Every structure is written in structure tokens, then in C-alpha cells.
Amino acid sequence: MLIDVHAHIGRIVLDRREFMDAANLIARMDAWRIDRACVLPVCEHSKAPYLEAYTADVLAACALYPKRLIPFCLVDPRFAGNHPQADFRFLLEEYRARGCRGLGEMLPKLDFDDPRALNLYRQAAEFGFPVLFDLHDTDTSYGLRDGPGLPRLERALRECPDTVFIGHGPTFWAEISADCPPDERCVYPKGPVKPGGAVPRLMRAYPKLWADLSAGSGYNALSRDGAFGRRFLEEFQDRLLFGTDSCRRSDLERGVPIVPFFHALRDNAAFPPEAWEKIAWKNAARLLRLEV
Image 1 (cartoon, rainbow, N blue to C red):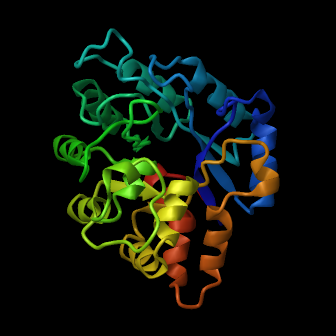
Image 2: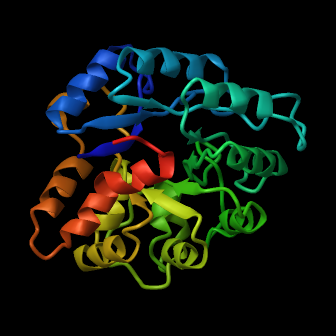
């Protein structure tokens, strides 16, 4: 069994030829031996409030393949007049009733601990929704912002103790190492991981912080230092989630590196099979309350 917690449909990149619908997603899942996938709404225009239509598209796609696709919902903390006490419960209640199992992918161009974002994180917890976020500390791209050492994420973990956060994105995974120069916080750093990074430190201190291994950022964090990557996977095996973050139709032919990496990990006699099973699907089933 393999559950992808980070899948997309639609036109995520600025090339209309890369548009991916539900049938394309299912074909890719079959080719990569993925049984189920969480479909996350995203909005390319991350500086403007998200439109509700993105979640509607995901719900419609997942309804076509209810045994394979799991919908997430997208709510913008800037919705409802940018008010830090805005009430999103009417939306979250509707999305839960329609089958959504989480909130994300969260990537507005805001500080991670913006009061409007903290307000939404707390309300998501009331509906049992984990918050899957993208951390990209730049003003020129999508993703929430945080400083060196991830102090804004830590503030959210302290002030939203009931919320499960699922970490993802270049800045999040760059902070797996204590040696993270400013010019490498939004790319894929190379070389050995220096112990003491913010990600393992926060995961040890806050049990509500999880992480998904998707995209080049997750793959790079695990593969740049093979020995550290294996230790990280074993230490946090109860809160790590397999994911792909594949956004292009062409990925079906060229692949994404996390998929062969993870299949090879299963065949590695030195890696505990029970840890692989947890990351592959058991953690996702437990967190999202899935019947498997």
C-alpha cells in the first residue's frame, strides 16, 4: 500500500500543455504503484486571495475516483476582509461534510505567524484538519515566509497546540541542517547535513509537527547526506508521510526522484520494513482517519 499525501490536478505551471486532470493523475498513480492520493488545491496567484473554485475543482475530480482520490480544501486567511478574527467555520464545516480530510496546500505570501493565518490554523484543528503548508521565504514566489531557525513556525506550534502541521517546501527542508546560509534557504542545498537543524529540533519538541517527503525539496533533504537521511527517517517514522507533489503531465514519462528513492528504500535490507510501512501509508491513514 502506498498513499501519496501531496498530489495536484489542474494547470499548476505556466504551460497549458501541462494541464493534468483526474484521469492523468490516476494513470500516473498506476505507473508509480500508488494506491491512493490526497489532491491539494493550489492557486498560482499566491499574492491574491484564493478562489473557492479551486476546492470545487478538487471535489469534482475526487468524486470521479472516490476509492483512489482524497480531497483537501483550500481556505485563504485573507478571505472575509483580512480580519484576524474572521470566522471560517462555515466553509470548513461544508468541506468536511463533502469529504475533505485536510487543509492545504497553504502557500499565501504571508508570514507563517501572521494573525490571520494563526486564526485559520486554530479553526482547522476544530474540524480535525491537518494543515499542509509550503514554506518559501522569498517575496518573489509562492509560499509562507519564515526566518532562519523557523521562529514563526515555532510560534504557531506554541500558539496552536491542537493543530497538526505538515511541513513542506524549500525553506522548510533546507532547515534540516544547522548550516543553512541565507542564499540557500530557498533552493536545494548540497553536502552533509550539520546536526542541530531547525526541522529535527522542532519535530522533537512539538509532536504536532509532521512532514511530507514530496518534491525535489523533500528528496534533496533525504538524499544530500544518505546516512543522516536514514537516521531522520527512522527517528521520525511516526510523523513522516510519503508524497510526490507532481504537477506536470510530463512527469509520467520523466518521473520524480522521490518515487524511485522510496521504492528503493523498501528494498534496502538495512531499513526497517515497519518504518517504511508507516511512512508509506499507515501514518497517513491514521492522521486522515482513512479506511484502508
